[in-house]
Length: 249
Image 1 (cartoon, rainbow, N blue to C red):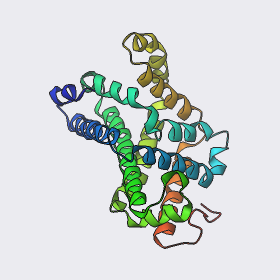
Image 2 (cartoon, rainbow, N blue to C red):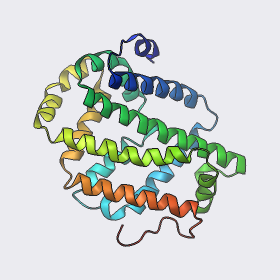
Image 3 (spheres, rainbow, N blue to C red):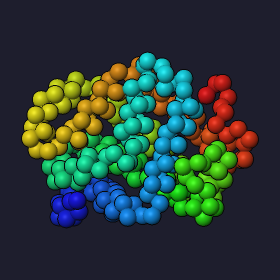
C-alpha cells in the first residue's frame, strides 16, 4: 500500500489535510483489519446489515427512481471485502488529488472515506462483541444484533454514520448534476486503464450513473436518515420489532 506517499504529500488546505488524515487512519485500519482474527465475522455482519437495510427500505430499493442509488450505496460504499484495489488507488493518486481538485470535492472524498471507515470500525466492534457472547456472526439474528448493538461503546459514531450519509449524499447529488463530470469520466476511462486505476474510475463512474438516474435525491436521503434514526431509537429502547417503522417514515 501507499502510506509513505500519503505522509510525504504536502496538504496545503484544511480540506486536503482532512482527507489526508482520514486516508491515513483508513490505511492503518485496513492493515489492522486484514490481520484481525474476526475479519470474516465482520464481513458476515456487513452482509447481514446490507440485507437488513434492503428490507427496511424495501419500498425505496425496488423503486425505479431510487434502486440504482441504493444499490451503489450497499454494494460500493458498503462492501469492504471487494474494494482493496480501489482503496489502494485512492492512496496512490492522493498527491494528484490535492494538486488538481477543488476543496469542495476533496471534502466529498473525505466524507466518503470517513463513512467507510466508521462503518467498518462499527462492524468489527460488533464482531468482537458477538465473539465475547459466544455468538457466531454467520448465524446472527435480530435479537443477537440488537443485544450487542446496545453494548457498543461507539454509539456516537453510529450517529455520525447516519449524518454522513446525508452530507455525502447531498454533495454527490450536486456534482452529478454537472454534465461536465460525466464527460470527464468518459474521456478519462482509457488513461485510467493505462495508469492501472480501473477500479477507482469504475467506482466513480458507477456513482455518477447511479445518482444521475435518481428522481429526488433529497427525498431519498431524508427518508433514509429519518428511518435509520428511528431504527437506532428502537434498538436502544428495546423495541420488540426494532426494524418495523411507522407508515409515515
